[in-house]
Length: 204
Image (cartoon, rainbow, N blue to C red; front, side):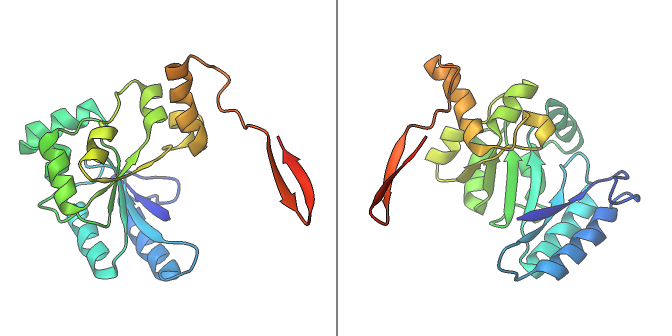
């Protein structure tokens, strides 16, 4: 899945604010229905994309049945500003805009409460759990087990390479278990053997 970032300020690939929206439309037109790549909208976050553009993205996403990826409930400032401006959590803010649905992949979700989790479950939102990136930034840890136990679709994520220093999903798991098991050498690949054309081959 490849998402075109959309921001309210200029970026290297889009010199105009919100220029990423036109690029996302082109990306989806070029790759929609392809066997290997699923194109997506990627508005950065509720605090870097205004409500009008988020509503527009939701509408086009529904029209094209295209996924939407967004950073959500990740920053303390995000929680404070949206609560002050709208009296809602970031998750609640996306609902009237039409974004909370099966096409949404919400990254991070550190600061979600029980009401948010129930709402995401009801709307069939997917969650990308970027554990190591959140540990590096010391922002906190998402209640991933609670979300999983309540039936949300949740998977491991890395965020960008600057956020967690790696794009290796296995390493994401291993780093946490190094602490749990007090073993700094994880991950290890145990010796394995297999047969190929009657010859035993060992892999280390």
